[in-house]
Length: 117
Image 1 (cartoon, one colour):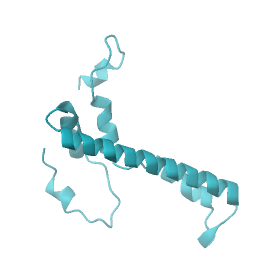
Image 2: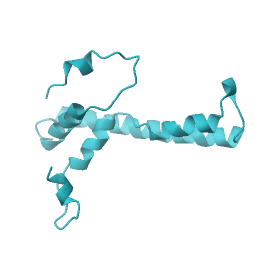
Image 3: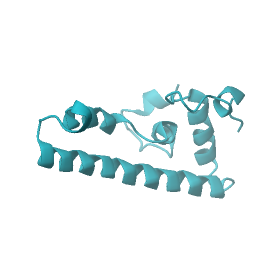
Image 4: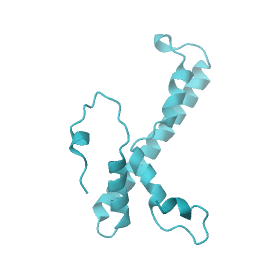
C-alpha cells in the first residue's frame, strides 16, 4: 500500500484532485479489515469527520439562507450562491468512493456486474 510520491509532495496551494491510487489503497485496507484494524479505524474516524463537516456546511447554508435570503452579503457575494456548490465537495473523496467496493453484495443484486471490473 504505497501512495504515489507526487501525491505526497504536491503543492497544498492547489485544489486536491481525487486519485485512483488513493481509492485503491482504501479498497485494500478494507478488503483485509482484520489485518488493517488501525487503518480501518482511521478510515471510520475520517468518515465521521467528513460527515460532521458536511452536516455543518449544510447548516451554515441554511443559516445564511435564513439570515440573508438571496441578497448580497459580505464582500458583495450572494452568500447562498457562493455556499451551495461547497455542498458537493466531500472530504476524503476516495474513502467514500472506495466504500462502493466494501463487502459482498446480496445474491441477485443487479449491481454485481459493475463490481466485476
